[in-house]
Amino acid sequence: MKEQLRACILKGIEGCFADGTLASGTVPAIGVEKPAHPEHGDFSTNVAMQMAKAERKAPRAVAEIIVNKLAGSSDLIGSLEIAGPGFINFFIKDDAWRKTLAAIDQAGDAWGKSSIGAGKKVQVEFVSANPTGPLHIGHGRGAATGDAVASLLFAAGFDVQREYYINDAGNQMNTLGLSGLLRYRQLLGEQIEFPENCYQGDYMKDIARDAVTKYGDRFMKVPQEEGVAFFAKMGGDLILRGIDEDLQDFGVRFDNWFSEQSLFDDGKVKSAIEEMQGKGLIYEQEGALWFRTTDYGDDKDRVVVRSNGVTTYFASDIAYHRDKFARGFDWVIDVWGADHHGYVPRLKGIVQGLGHDADDLGIILVQLVSLLRDGVPVAMSTRSGEFVTLKEVVDEVGRDAARFFFLMRRSDSQLDFDLELAKRQSNDNPVYYVQYAHARIRSIFDTARERGVVPCFDDVRLELLQSADDMSLIKKLSVYPEILEGAAVNFEPHRITYYLQELAGEFHSFYNKSRVITEEPALTQARLFLLHCVAVTLKNALTVLGISAPERM
RNA sequence: GCGCCUGUAGCUCAGUUGGAUAGAGCAACGGCCUUCUAAGCCGUAGGUCAGAGGUUCGAACCCUCUCAGGCGUACCA
Image (cartoon, rainbow, N blue to C red):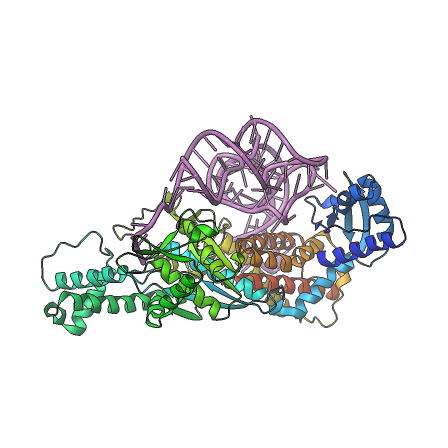
């Protein structure tokens, strides 16, 4: 609707140039927006104010010329007025609004989708937790965010792949192996003090127990190195499988699991370093190899290969991101915990060093989650291993509530997650508020059928929808595509959760004031059609967030 | 020290990329079920947008400084 109006205004201004009522000949970017107050119309534009200087006229005078040209020029515009310092306010004809409903019905599941992505290949990499322990609640927020952003981009017409990067190289795997081996030896009766820097969680004991069942005391007799290697492999595999299961229970599936170790096995780390050396971006100093990240705005250069010959994690990152682009992605998006924000400049450096634009790498920082129970913080400590896992949260509050809560806030602001609130089946729980709206609509359809009203949308008389409540609901529906698009390109799923709450609110309000099943068959059909469109929109928006739209509650 | 993020109603947060009189939910208070799901609705109250300057027709939003909180500043991953 906004776009149609924008085109309309542009045409009008060009008309003014053509007949000489306006002289400058240049059209600024036309800002069209929805005024905060309904008295100011459905939309307003500030072009007159922007053009005032070039036209050497007062803003309101320019507005008047444009208004004269626009009046009656389109079946979109019902009336228009000049207001304030030179705004032009537009009141859209109800008929034009009502056409949205037909569009929604026709598009169905595709309602809201756009093609701005133009099939561009984009990869979203997220979670990517080390396979050294189960996912905790912070990973949950990253998972919900990454998954939703991927879905949003898909809805915006991008060709999206979801990827999980497995950090299965590096010395945390040794620590994992050692942790497993020591728990194993403890289990078989040996008195060992478990080191502080080993993984403390009980899941290590489970892994050890598993090994005892399957292999008996076999690893008591082998050299420690062999035992560590075994437990690193076994533990890593087991933990990774557990992570995958937890994610699937959470409704997240990856298209690809990418192993860091494979970068070494395939010689990609080596070749990446060589390429960068060839470009003069990697140099040697004090026996180590350094990447010139300062060329790209980093505080200092970063070590790629240590003086002892061992590569750093950063080396893997160079190879990994090089590989992503080599796989044909035009746009690469990383989702990180916000505590890694210091790594942004050096990763942007890699990408530019590879010859891409800095913006070809998008980075989403997800802030930490504070877990509460009825407003009281739940104690969490990674060191003692007593953190709350994603699985525990999902088991307790359910997948839908968990996802909704994770997505309720902008990802770069900290999030309070109240377990009791998420479970509560009342109006202060936004998840149920939204889902209830969907279930309620389904219920109205059930009731209609019970009363012998068969919904038939072949020839709906939309013009019967003329109450204020009908119209505000229709207007709310019509902005969904813009909301979806904005949420996608800005990586901001929370815009959808807000929109859902607003739409559900409009519906509930409508429901309390307006009868759907009435004595007039034509009006009943029209209202059923309207609610059908609300249900489609609610469901599409929930689906893009990975949340179900229940038929009944 | 330097860098990044945050600061908006009692609480938790939005704020359409610079627009008109700053919004929502919760909490508080007062109403609404013999009619399609009360997991709902309607109303009242609540503000120095951390502070001070600046940019312009116009600033919660952009620039500078100050204050407060968080995070980061490895030849760790």
